[in-house]
Length: 107
Length: 120
Image (cartoon, rainbow over all chains, first blue to last red; front, side, top):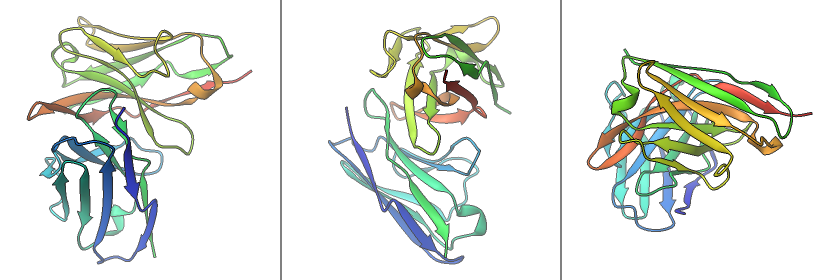
């Protein structure tokens, strides 16, 4: 199975800041990676697919990059509604696996 | 608008069974990959099972032999039959519809989730 490791596990930031979350795969997954946002008590929401493609309706302050084993999610100009938990997920092979999550908290 | 509505969760004793349903609208279950993803209380996301449009099914090792994914094309509904339930199966179970992009599939649409609690 492909292991996905996110860092940091949690991060504190202020409205207007830029935050970067990293995700590392235990083996190369090309660009077959997605990022999801989850708010408490809600289902996850797809933000980024294919490592860098923005899902329809997602604000352009979200961006993704990377390929192979190392990936990043960057959120620019943080808004109050961005404080949530973020997960990466590899779509290269079954079983699909997720990172452990990164909780973005308000400073 | 795509809607996925799960039902069937609840409290069940260890060793018991439960069947989850996911009724879809605005999204054709038989034409798309459909999956179940679960989340234990306070924990991260865990993929459980997928059914491909062609009917092939796959499972996480943690549920293989105990859970069965299926669909009813006429009802546009996805199911998860869960047998021999264990305490560690306690989680919110999400139904997800996958979207295909560049030869890979991602969890594009999600239901609101249904809670399964396995406890005596």
